[in-house]
Amino acid sequence: MIEIRGVHKSFDGNHVLRGLDLHVEQGETMVVIGRSGGGKSVLLKHIIGLMKPDEGSVVVAENEISSIDKRDLNELRRMFGMVFQAAALFDSLTVAENVGFGLRRLTGMNDREIASKVAEKLELVGLGGIESLRPAELSGGMRKRVGLARALAMDPQIVLYDEPTTGVDPILAASINKLVRDLNTRLGVTSVVVTHDMASANTVGDRVAMLYQGVIRCVGTPEEMQRSDDAVVQQFIRGSAEGPIE
Amino acid sequence: MTTFLAGLGATWLNTLQRTGEIWLLIVRTVSCLKRAYANRHIVIQQMVEIGVNTLPMVAIMAVFTGMVLAVQTGHQAVRFSLEGTVGPLVGLSLTRELGPVLTGVIVAGRVGAAIAAQVGTMKVTEQIDALETLATDPVEYLVMPRFLAAIVMLPILTICADAIGIAGGFVIAITTLNLEGDAYIHGTFAALQISDIMGGLVKAAFFGMLIAIIGCHFGLTTTGGAEGVGKSTTRAVVLSLMLILVSDFFLTLLILGGRLV
Image (cartoon, rainbow over all chains, first blue to last red; front, side, top):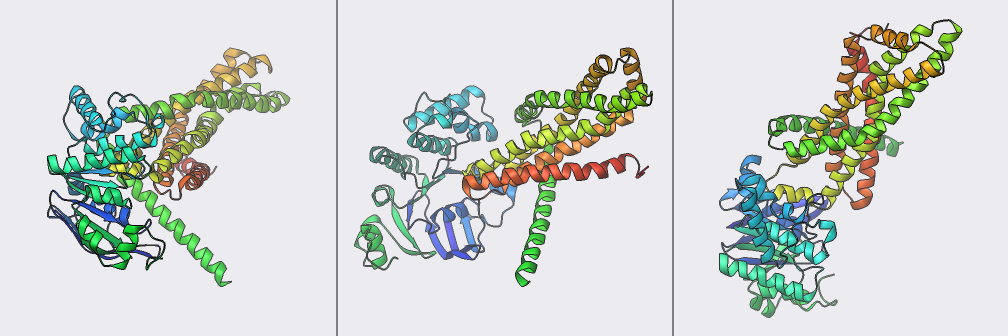
């Protein structure tokens, strides 16, 4: 479903991705773990075509994202949903307008159908009845869930999550993890979850990939990662200050 | 010396890059104009913001500019018994120059700053990225409606400024200079030609395009959080004001057919 081959990316001389390879199967939830600032969000932005690699290729559903034209890229993006780290809700719009944004612009649905779909997605994330509120009136956790509802509004085949549980309380984190898991098992959605929350990685991931120094250091099921004898992986999983990671 | 030359070179390259990016943004925006009807509710929203909400400030500016023009010209005209020239001078000064330029300055300060701040905040909070992931072109959704609204509303604001300014001059003429009201109005409209008004409106439309494009460009290229938004806003306003004044000179030459006298 998603094939990333030899991707390099630099920003002002800072070589963030250094020949990264990753394969994500259809219907799989792949969790990418790694240190903050290690290039995890950059990786997600390459998958959805917000960034182009300096070298290498990103192929999604047999389409080379890094070289297709803008029109085809926008067509391809209809199969994606993306949950941003800080939600990235549109400040000038209400919750309903945020969640229904893609439906209004990209589908032929009428107002009643859009309202019904918006209500359904808000119920799904446990936020029914807040359609008329503005993003400024929401708490951090609510914003995150509205962002999730917006990402799911178009019933995407692939959902990209950028730190979905960062900055929320443990109970809300558990409910977000459950939702990600349910989408995968019930609807067969392919997901890429970027996080440094190991509890979340172990709960939602079919496989976990560790991004370290610009490449995927190790890939395996959560159990395989736990048993890994790689000192870098073990230090990250244990959250230890002592070890090869500086 | 080497550092100075390197700095000079970097500044020059940066200016060239910005100029190229602004031209490219204009081309992309114009190519999105065919989607204006599909985005009409955003265009109308921007017209209200740029036009209707700016009108009170433009009205205050215009009425006092008209009054001060009448006081200044009237003071000299009375000395030389040329009271009849007050109306034409106020009318021509406003329609040809002060109406479009001062309206442009006010819109650059109020709307240009707001555009750069809004778009810049959207950029640093990943809202622009979110738009793209929702298969929406930020130029079509954010830039084109502001561009179109500014080009339409600046001339309308300028017509209002011209009329209010002439009315301000009229009040001074009949109350302070003791001129006949009929003579002032007749003199003004006898001196004004349609080309004077149209020339001012062409300038206003051009200033509208400058303000919208520069505000959007600096917004879309914002980096560095709240501090970056502040810098982008300041740069957008300063560049808009400078370009309004510089382009006004060249547009005046163009409208007068290249004649300096």
